[in-house]
Each structure stands twice: as structure tokens, then as C-alpha cells.
Image (cartoon, helix red, strand yellow):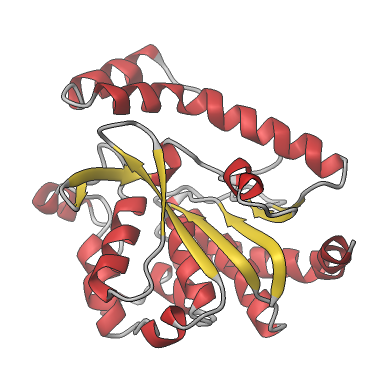
Length: 284
């Protein structure tokens, strides 16, 4: 267990398979962190890391035909969600990809799941160490993409994708007292987000009852680009350690098992290459 250090996991839907490769290598080395922060798809990686289940996130993303389809445009029409959330957060944990709740709930790691409150437009950082159903609801909310999934209500409050309000919670980690931060990104160095006026108009119409959330959606590129700029600067200064793809990332809705497997292996191999450097960073 690496104390007083955090690992921060960016989302990106099925691009999270890169992060699962990174974390699987760490689990093989029995290298765990005291603090784990997961955003959107990164929250799934986070809980599987804390529950010490190598391969689980990968297998939930790269599925056989008999194992059910994660992405279905037919499902989008029927359940108003591109991704099969019932499969991920209800069937899998109790079925073909069982989640080890006992190990998770008794872990010495603190796992925080990032959600966006649709009423306030602000990020919330949630933990859950007792209630199985609530834990899966938090994950579902963190992974629910605006316009691609319905809102998830928790304690009567509507939530969506944690990446809207805080895509990479590095500042939150620092404010929490973590002086050593390992950031796992799912985009290449230099990537920046943009948003069109048309997209803003769509958001304004779709979420007119939630003006603070619309504001957060429209400002997301600004804050995302700001934190990525900080990360690149602090990386050069040796203040944070970053693992990111060195090849072209997959689409967030990629369904080809071979393409996804290659991206998973790339994450594993990148962590293998950078492992000793990371350990030196953590020891300083």
C-alpha cells in the first residue's frame, strides 16, 4: 500500500480499457494506493482496483457474444442509453463478472467516485463502504453520459457523468492532502476539448430544467483544457506522474474486440515500461 499517494483515473467510456491494462499490471506487482479517484468509466476501474480483481474491467468491456453486448443502439431506443447500464451494474456484479464487495468494503484504500450534480452543476465525490446497491448506483451515475443515458437519482437528487464537472480530479486530490499523484489519462498528450455553438444549443434545449448543469456542460472544455495544461506543466516539473496512451486512442464506442484488446495491452505495456520511474517518483 502506497500511503499519502493517490491514483486518479480519467474516463472515456471504453477507452477505460487502457486504464484497466495499467491497473492490472499494478495489481500483478501488488502495488496499491491509499487513495483512488475514479471519474465516469474510470470509476469502474477504480472499484475493481480497490477490490483487487485484475481483468474484471477488461472483461466487462471486451465481451464475447454470449456475454451480452455492452453497446447497443437498439438499447438506446428501448432504454434511452447507448450503454447497457443494467448489464454493467446489475447483472455483471452478481453474474458472470462477480464483484468482490467484501474485499472492496474492507479495503484500506479510500475510493472516491466522481458524479455531477445536475441541480448545482458541481462535482461531488462519493464513497460507499456498506451498501452494495448504492455503490452500483454511484457507478451508474458517474458513467451516465448526457444525452446518451438517463439521469440517475440518488437520495432524490439527479446525477450524470462525473467528467462534466471534474474530468480529472487532480486538484481535489491535492486539496485532500495527497502530495504524490499518479494520473492515468485515456487521451494522448496535447489533446484539448472543443464545443460548438450547435452543441451548446442542444444541451440548453435538452436540459432546460437544469440551467446550472447546462452551464457546466458548456464550460467543460475550458476546465478540462485548463487541468490538462496544469498536468503537462507539473509533469515536466516532476510534481505529478502521468501515464497516457502513446498510440491513437480508440473511440469511446469502439466495439471491435481486437482493437480494444490492443488498447488494453498498450495500457499494460505502458505501465510496465514506466513502473520503475513511477516507484522512484513515489519514493522522493
